[in-house]
Image 1: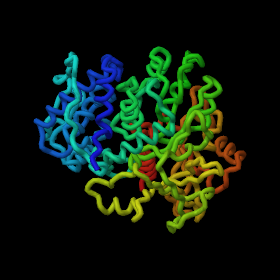
Image 2: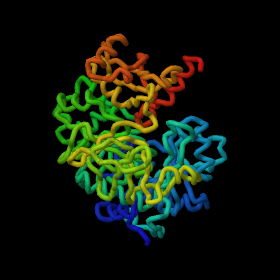
Image 3: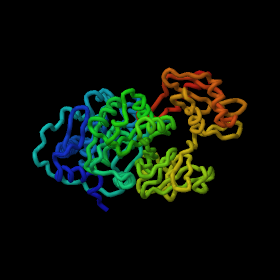
Image 4: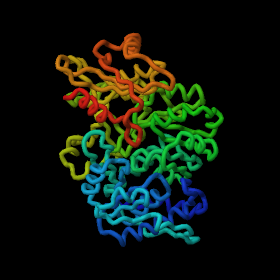
Length: 498
């Protein structure tokens, strides 16, 4: 089945119907739908002349240039490989080799990251289309089926080398449709794009969805709490998708006021657990309910989401249309929805597989196409999903299981703690013991013994008690704000000399 309307065509439909409406505002200016369509068309022609390879790399910050390059790549009949420019040289070299790209679109500031790689570099600054023709027209669409590859996104590399997640036209279109329907998104909403577009969360929520709606997106190449507040306050941003640390930074702004958020429809948090302190703080100070969602790169990504009309704090919401969930025990047998188990999910948004990794693909997908997320969760009686931890992160203390997320939640209830990360450390007598890294709020402090006493008062079991508590100025994070526990684990090993 050909799916020309999928992903590409909405951009040109909006350019024809409302050519002068603003599609994008970024750090350099404003771009109408006509300008954006013209940029994509011009880039498509240039890409087609430049390379015969099936895949094309995009090494670009959140901006109109990324969007034009993305749609131009698809229009040229190519698959877009979204490259995380914040990765190290080793990971970057792996992505270039693994994806088979010979051409990358980028900007002068990021071009040095691929110098010496042998790639053909398309400099967007030299190809900018400042004055498109009055009638850009609709170019010939490439014939693509729902199963054809559209995007390869590499996992953030929290463990080992990044894996290329293959997402098809059908995967992405089905998830965009599901997210728009579930969250009741409208053309009138103004989206604030603060997450890198090389991440699946940013790509779907802050590019594909607003472009399909013909809405406006305000992009920031680098997150700043003050700049985000200014966009909400002065540009009327009504939809924000962010990670908890971003909302925490906005909450710490001294001059932020409830009236700044009067136009907000929804502020959605994902990427990692939203702390109760930030969620309650936002509600108490600004009257804004932060809404948690759930998804992975392998699921395009959104599969569950709280919405303004139906929200349950502490949960990640109800499944989006088309997403089917199953909870299983260690043997892979289904458990009752209200019991905790590993989350398996299937639906049209589930990835095609991992690029060049057939064994890993077979291990991640069941024969009936359930994706094994590795996350632990349960549903309540009303169908809201709660994430209770990561299967691989469970700490086994003398045969007893301890969930890092549970312990982190308890630590973050303490008035002095701003953030916490918990992991297991090898122990000769118990197998593992619990170790915590904490960040204190400004002008706040507590001793490890005080924190342990607090944990006991909160009813934390003895084997879940942190044996060691390290006070740190910050936690290592991925570009989307997820705590990199691998880095913390390496720190523990280095300090113990093991």
